[in-house]
Amino acid sequence: MGVGWAVFRNYRGHAKEILGNVTDYPRFFLMPPSAMVEADEEGRNIVTLLDPSDHIDHEVEMVFRIGEGLTPVQMCVGIDTTNRTRQTLAKKKGWPWLEGKGFRGSGVLGTWTDWDERPVEIGLSVNGETKQLESTELMVHTVESLMSHLLQWYDLESGDLIWTGTPKGVGPMKPGDIIEAWMKNMDSETTSVLSAVCK
Image (cartoon, rainbow, N blue to C red):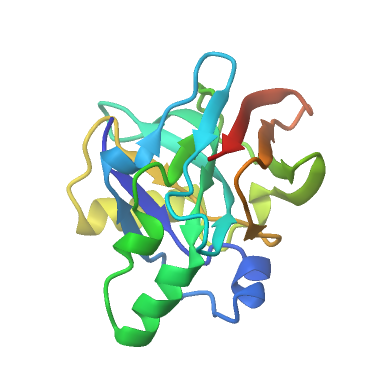
């Protein structure tokens, strides 16, 4: 698996709920390959909390994988888990965010499908209650914008994953929670699923 390039504050609703601003161009943080966990063919996976005493949020996202031509070839639903306790401390101290955003198991992936450039709906529920539901049409920076900026500044490689940001509704998870996430296309067909237990 390649590196994860994750854009932040790419939905106005989420930026508002964390008291942040959207940015004039896409800004990214890195997720090491060891942070990302593939689902099985049925979409089953695990959300690793590492330290359940910390505040750890779910963030549903559309994720795409780039191929040999450095263009999108596959896509899936994913959960970018954020250790808000450690991220907040890092912000306050001026430290890097890696403990809060790139820890082991923090990038939880669903089932893959072929790339489709049309908007999709992404959603997430915790113990059967829907917490996040939004269309990628509302992304501040489009896929084209994300790729243009990445290609201008960085050397991407085939297999790298691009995490496109989360909509409003993020919230904490605890051990034993059942997290379901999904992605639907323009025809309301479910194209990617993810079912995970928090441990």
